[in-house]
Length: 81
Image 1 (cartoon, rainbow, N blue to C red):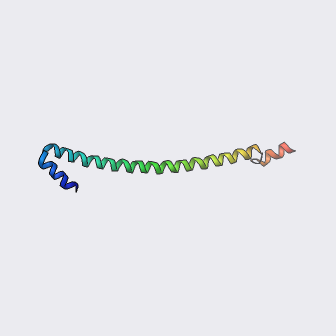
Image 2: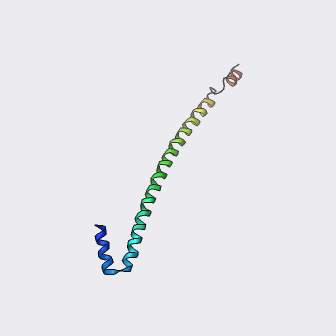
Image 3: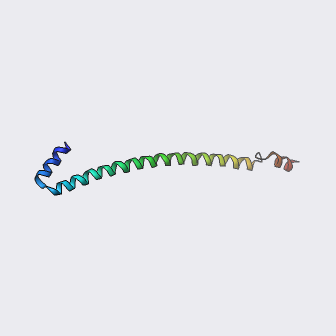
């Protein structure tokens, strides 16, 4: 369908129609490329968010162990006795 429209444009308009067709094809290729880049970046960011959440959880557990003196049994013995 696009081909017939483009042929009609070329017959009636001429060289500017050729320029438009070249631009149109280039533009569609660029849009597809940017969609792939955005999808790839989204996946990377999703993985980074999961990694950050895991790191925050681990650090929170470490902090709670340090606060309750469970982290170091030697220090716990020294403080207690």
